[in-house]
Image (cartoon, rainbow, N blue to C red; front, side, top):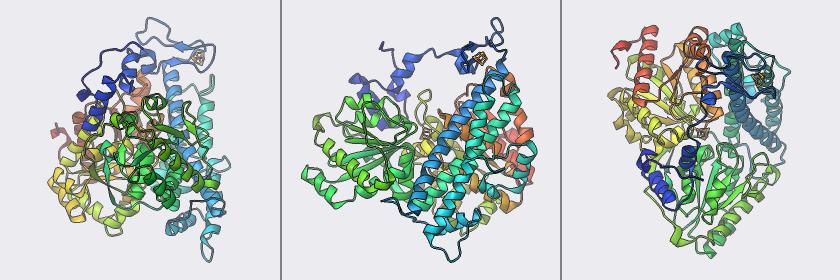
Length: 636
Ligand code: SF4
Ligand code: SF4
């Protein structure tokens, strides 16, 4: 490949560990995501605007954004139709990814209930019973396995097409549910809405961009209040509902004296078993026989978040660290499940001794060793994977190892249950602090890294500006890891916050930035917002809340943004979505949607300006609720 000139590493990432490894990769000629982005430039302008279509072989077609060239595809689709169809398919892909993850958890849960798995159990019986009651499954006098079997059946029904609404919508405030009913976007079945979106976006079906976008919202709601919620809730039942835990983050969590195994991807099903296997005395003895002091498990991306939240496993890094961790030369095995795992990792791993082990039959990686995940043999497979990591350790070349940095402490584990416990069992103290103006509002800062943005810059700066201005920040996914690495997620980080928020955090012993989990756990933010709205007897859209995805890249992030907005929370994006070829679709999403669902999107790449936008938005919501508010126009 032609090597284009790259900027200084200090402009590519915020954290020193990432910068050190980018420099090493460059010095050794190891290609990373930043090289590949540079090689792709200039990227296709039609695709960036959402104006290209290859939905059929009369095309591919593209619309000329300047008006000189074609304004319609071969079938007659104009810019509005093409942009809306592309957006709809993006939402469906993201919602499908989350929901398929949810179904995988559900299937293992069902098999566990029948006693067919090894390495799994029902750890949170109270949550199991609460969920069962919510879905109308009998609880009294029954053992947990019988309850779990019926609950699994009821949840599997949510994926199908035989119902008019998915099951957990009782959590949604009445006003919001009635609004969805009025505009016809109540999600019926998880699979159904996704399939219907693919149907609608076939040539010659839905040619009204407003109609397509509304179905996009419905599809995303089947993710946020459906598939992702199933994943979160059942992961809690099987692996334990997270409680606050202090852990560590950055590449400094790797250990020179130990077998280092990274668990990467999204689904906790196998990684949780690997955590159990790594404590096996025979495997520990095997590692020691080979000269290692122990077995050091570290997390990456959302599998890492799942393990950090529940087991305190240290976090090596977020999305753009996945190649850089290999460049340390100290990683013996990278175990991957699915989602956000770059195909490039096997190429980088070849430069070192690292074994890449794929585990999901739906996510194979040429160049990796594939060990098919089978929950019926969960523990056996977990041990086999740890064994492979120990064998790879023998091939480590000490002179190639470059460890970097000291890990930073971070607190994770803020499930809704844990937050309510910290508040004394009810949202009332949080509502009171918001009403009194000590906390101005709350913002979910979520989503990915994207090499188009200096890694972690958007997450960490936006978060800092919000907490300085007494806005509580709830984080998930790679945004959580970014803030953890930046030292913004410990109780003492209250000193970084404004007087009001800082005082509340100090009184409760919590950080001003609360780690609520992985990407599917954005549902926890929805559930908390719904609980606050119900407590106050208002709709979610009336609350002083906002969402932000400063560095998003994935289709899943689009689905998340859509269900957050459809649930009534305005959201600001740090990266421009591929919709700007249709001014009508942009107007719908950034303006008109406010009149339909009480929330809208904004795009603002500069985190300083994004913080101002959010502060103005929150103060205007406070004004409308009659709470003490700062004049939004005075915030600049
Ligand atoms: S669906 Fe229409 S716009 Fe798209 S590729 Fe086919 S002919 Fe072209
Ligand atoms: S936040 Fe984005 S990049 Fe990070 S794990 Fe989730 S989807 Fe992947």
